[in-house]
Amino acid sequence: MTISETPTVEAARAAPRKEGMEGMIAARTAISKIDGLNGHLIYRGLDINDLAERSTFEETTALLWYGNLPTTTQLKNFNDKFVRNRLIPNQVLSFLLALPRRTSAMGALRTAVSASAAFDPNEGDNSLEANVNKSIRLTSSMPTIVAAWHRIRQGLWPINPRDDLSHAANFLYMLNGKEPTEKVAHALDVALILHADHGLNASTFAARVTASTLSNLHSSIVSAIGTLKGPLHGGANEQVMRTLLQVGDVDNVEPWLLNAFEEKRKVMGFGHRVYKADDPRATWLRKLAHEMAAETGDTRWIDMSEKMREVVQANKQLPVNVDFYSASLYYMMDIPIDLFTPLFAISRVSGWTAHVYEQYSNNRLIRPESEYIGLENVPYVPIAERD
Ligand code: ACO
Image (cartoon, rainbow, N blue to C red; front, top):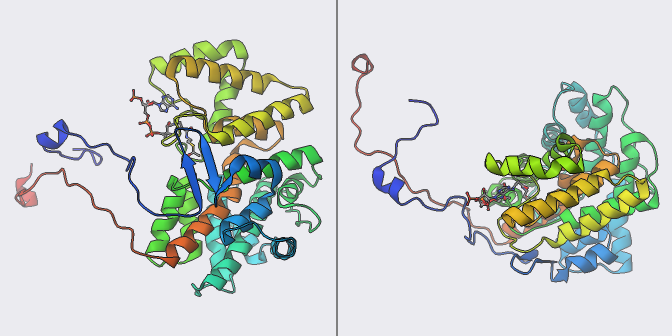
């Protein structure tokens, strides 16, 4: 018998349940709502399209945490706190320096966030005020961690954050020491807004399950980072780009996809548990990717993406998800592929932390049940008699 082989009773095999908690309501939230049938997303009641058009990541984070848009003074104070907390403690930097250079960027981020807990002055305090302070430090410093790791693994010294740049522009600056153009910084800012929250997605659920045990905020975020990393969730954006690179040319798209369908392989960046219509975030990212292609003068990746979308929709009617166009967008912005998912985390931490506050505010342990489908009344056979 192999480890993974679970003995099942015939009756359970004959009537399998839909796995993956599809359609189940596992929490109540006032943070974001997805209307999957109509392709509509709101944060705290505001349409994602309005936020993408007019907000900033910093303002959107304040909206997610406090429940409404900040006034000018509130936003200024919020931005000031954000900027003041960008540096990471030297001890956390030492953790990064100690990691093998082959460590994945998501692995380095998860490790550094876990280590950050030990150096956080509010560690051990689970009050709302302490958690807001911890969230500011985490949200402000995660871009610094990711950029520092990218430098360290190349044998370069990390670049200190600047206090005169936006969250998005500062991240790009810390990657290579070059201030991004306004267009590039704006594209990343919009992408961060679009990724900030999304109902009870897998990583947010993981964060809420951890918080529901009254474990601390850093532990919840570490759970969420580990969950986001997988290719069925946030890890898909990296896989989309690897697919595009593998396909290589717009003429190869159709045969490549037909072969993937034949072999029943999943095509990354397509399909969603909740959306049956196009994901509104993908609509924005598509527009940004087209603009970036025009800016760089290289339309190869967006041409391939459009052909992929056409062939997948003709054959499978699957909607594109948020990870599809973000891949080519980030690639054209010269962001290394394995930083795509950390970039998702840099944004989603604002939603995760909002959900952790919400979970604490009306907590009950999240503890579903499993349906046992194994054997019963199995006699214990002494080891000498098992051969
Ligand atoms: N490529 C090919 N077929 C697909 C895809 C896909 N990307 N997505 C779903 N399908 C097919 C399945 O094979 C299945 O077909 P079947 O009924 O003939 O077996 C059917 O559509 C239903 O798919 P499920 O996997 O059961 O749908 P589920 O709701 O469990 O999965 C998921 C959703 C994980 C997103 C899935 O669509 C997928 O694997 N997509 C690719 C990975 C991806 O892009 N993930 C990012 C999602 S967005 C995010 O998390 C940020």
